[in-house]
Length: 125
Image 1 (cartoon, rainbow, N blue to C red):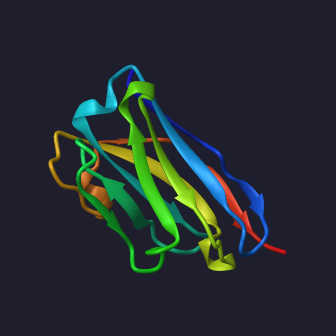
Image 2 (cartoon, rainbow, N blue to C red):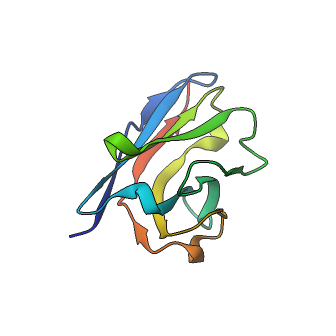
């Protein structure tokens, strides 16, 4: 059974940091591009960041550039999203998703085949 599980969400004050993890079970992430998406109440799901299957290519939404960093550790079958300088507008449920055999990656959710259940990130004082 192919499964993605996100973790690392929580409540943090503005300016704080969190690191999200996306762990795969039932398959190896080596051949998958991974994207991080988020959805706030009443808003559409939006792409935040992605990393290609090799790790050689990454993309970021303009709203998170310079603050978020995506990385992958294929030995641990896990992808990370380091989030720094968090803002209240970053509050959302964050999802990771996998797309098979992509030398590059995009931020369109329709490109992705498998999805996790999400982890809540709340930025508030």
